Length: 351
Picture 1 (tube, helix red, strand yellow):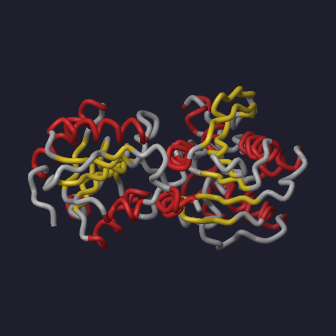
Picture 2 (cartoon, rainbow, N blue to C red):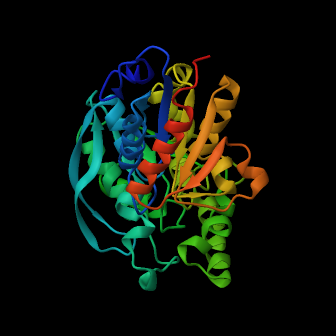
């Protein structure tokens, strides 16, 4: 039902003059800087400035920060406030606690909202103490608000607790009350590698990574079923695995789920060029992230794929998978880069 409605709600699409090139702008957020909608708006503005192309504005996400906004824009819904704990236990009054989609029965929660790395100053980060308790509080709040299904976007956490904190908070609130959990993951990492693969970016040193890994293995032995060696269970510092083991959460590709929900395939088929974007383009971008998913789909469809990113770590060979890769660190630069692409390609005949 979600996919069939996608594109009919809150989608900006120009009326197409005959013979003009059609652009699909589909950026992810530039995390910590600009939301996906801001980036898409700047790209669209640049393309329209030339007056020789049409554009479909399609912000995307892969299960990380910004996922709730993307789904709300495509499917309708409202943001509801909630109170929750941050990763170190401090109370937060969140005006954007979670999103209730237009069906009134599906909620979207982002782990980054209460358990995100960005909530803790760099000099105060504690990878061992960080807990997902606040995310559990948001899940419980969504269930109490009437959600029969909770979609959890697990990117951007400060935690490696295997979801133990979230499970405690949910149980304290009375459990899931029959509501289902769908976890959007952007990695295939199994539970036992959560701290090894992602602990360093959360501030954990080698000794702490070893401690966190031991703790995850001990937790796995106590869960109703073992998440060890199960793909995607390591997402979000292992919260995906904890919720899978206790509540039978379904683990899916965040990129694929979001793209299906917003009707991406249909929109891709109607364009001549797709422009992707994110804050930093690297090898991980091409291995499960939404940029890589769109690149693959564009190639299969025979559609040019351009990239405008905040920074890139790809070498020339990897960058060659795109028609071009440009860097832009401000909205004005993003707009100018998109205008340049439209200027070069806006007169190209339609295939």
